[in-house]
Length: 188
Image 1: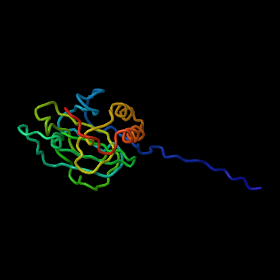
Image 2: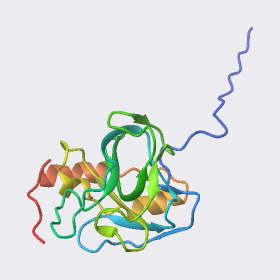
Image 3: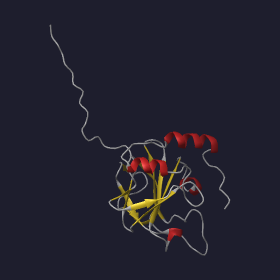
Image 4: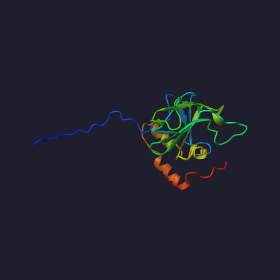
């Protein structure tokens, strides 16, 4: 009789699915944002802002066109990058000092890929440097009121900070079903 023994081998250091969006620096963030679901992650200017998960770059702004005398919602974020993750969720980071070289629409990124650097561009000029971090569903280009954030990220940020792979996909999907892909622009 032949006896076969199989041993299941798992990788010792499997890559995370999610990672915290600011790396290599001390940072802080609160649970809430001033007027819609998002989080500002405060960190030293120039700290690295990275992809929280694998996906494809969806939108990028490399020139700060915000004008304090004629402010518009679509330019408030200044320099920004958004990606659509492999989980179907859009992740957005704005107020960057600079978008990383090679980051353009359609570029494939993995968790931890450098997207840009913490700054104070757009309507954050003169404030403490930070990344405005938003989670939403994908939309066509320049639907800024969705792109800036629809789901409070803090629960996911807490998880990723702890090294866990908590996904916002089900919360985003439920909210999309409730609100529709392009809800009306909120009144201030």
